[in-house]
Amino acid sequence: MRSSVFGQRNLWLAVIFFVVAMSELAAQTPVNFKIAFIGDQGAGSRARSVLNLIKAEGAQLVMHQGDFDYNDDPAAWDAQIDNILGSNFPYFASIGNHDEDRWSGANGYQQFLMSRLTRLGITWNGNLGVLSSLYYKGIFIILVGPGVMGSGHAAYIKNKLAADKSLWSICSWHKNMRAMQVGGKSDETGWPVYEESRQGGAIIATGHEHSYSRTHLLSSCQNQIVASTSDTLVLTKDDSSTAGDESRSFVFVSGLGGNSIRDQERCLPATPPYGCKGEWASIYTSNQGANYGALFGIFNLNGVPNMAKFYFKDIDGVVPDSFVVISKVEDVRTAVDATAVESAVEFILEQNYPNPFNPSTTIRFRLARPQRTKLIVANLLGEQVRVLFDGDLAEGEHVMVWDGRGGDGSKMSSGSYLLQLESSRQILTKKVLLLK
Image (tube, rainbow, N blue to C red; front, side):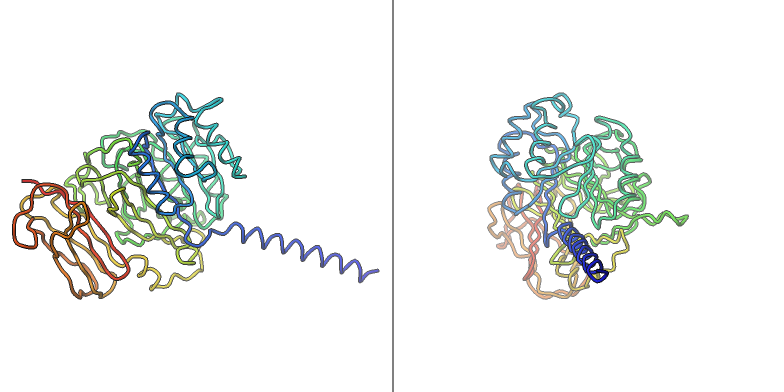
């Protein structure tokens, strides 16, 4: 009899362990799980082009940082998503200031978002898109509306991140503080939402300013203190048992979803180190010839759970920014092989300076290792105009100059051109503007 009881107990323990193991497995982020981040979308051909880009890039989730169609037509906005991505495509969003009037109630934006999550069997906590959080594919996502709707956003972020043990967490909202974008926006959210997100080790995703910008790794958002200028950003969480603040994160604005493109008003000149306090790793506005596009993040990169690769890509195929993020928020023991980082970022191509330019412009790029490298100028059709370099280069920073001439030595006409840096495994592109 006693043996039978022990046998039953062991059987139940085995079942419990199996369920726990399966739950942990289900919570893991799939290998090369890709998220597209957009904001300030609008309706019409430009917004559809961005959604088609997201589809073509194979994104498996969209996170939308507010401002939807600008027409107060939730049904048409939802149909635009369905027509390109499908009615069961995961699409999460935070409220934007242009979404307030039709946000709540029957057939409001929030109702369409809730209906989509319900169809997908995704549950959430709180007031969706205003003061809410959810888990998806092992990633903890906070969707809030500071400066737009609701209150207590910073306390909510703090409490949720403190209780969370996920490898990856993302805090998403629409509006900004002025120092966290490069356009004309004013202080609208307060600093606590930024600082609580950083201290919790979360990636900070915003919109509102119709451009793209990304900070270096920061040890303080409020004071714009740069912890590292490396394009491998290591996220850390604050240890509450110590007096110091060990947390590090970064902030981005991905506001080129299709509505309009604005110019750079802050941190001029429009090239590294971007003036201000040098917090900017990448800026892509009308000053840099920006086009509409999305920021893509690939998580569990090539099977390394705490590694992700990000790149911004526009609808012309231009990639003005590419970087790697490593999560150490829970003191992860998973090794990140140096080769894995190297393969994720073969090289970094900075925006040329000056841009626009006449008669010449300087091009800087950094190689992760010695390699065969080709730097060319092409027109917007992708046709080669001039080869600036084709050969072997050492690891490190390199500087080259384009004098605005084609391969035959003739002066090129005014207009936009593409700088393209190539290796055997990676191609990066920047748009440049020649003026006469």
